[in-house]
Image 1 (cartoon, rainbow, N blue to C red):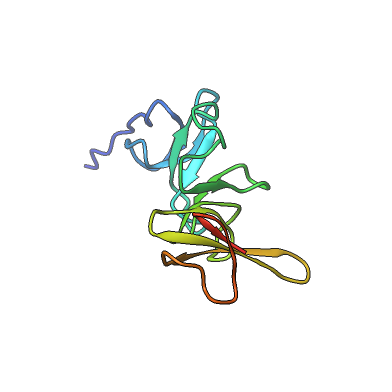
Image 2 (cartoon, rainbow, N blue to C red):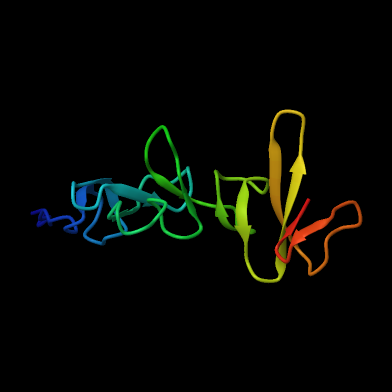
Length: 128
């Protein structure tokens, strides 16, 4: 005899694969933003869209098409999207390197206290 029983999702989840608040598949109205560890994950945590200024927790970015939040590259403290060249800000001990390209600007974090020789320091945290 199979004794499986259905259990309720966490209160923040609309649908889920488990009872934990990190096992949400979709979110309800009170916490509508699904935070995923990366774009390959399907389970995440639902957060209140008004709890964070950017709609995502620190070190995450909001994906415009889905509205889900994904983790930034490890070198970025905040970012536009995933990738080493999409940083908005860096962690202490790193500088944000702003490097213009033909069609966009590449923003990457470099663990250094001084700007590389081909760059000029514009603030204590940025090099151009």
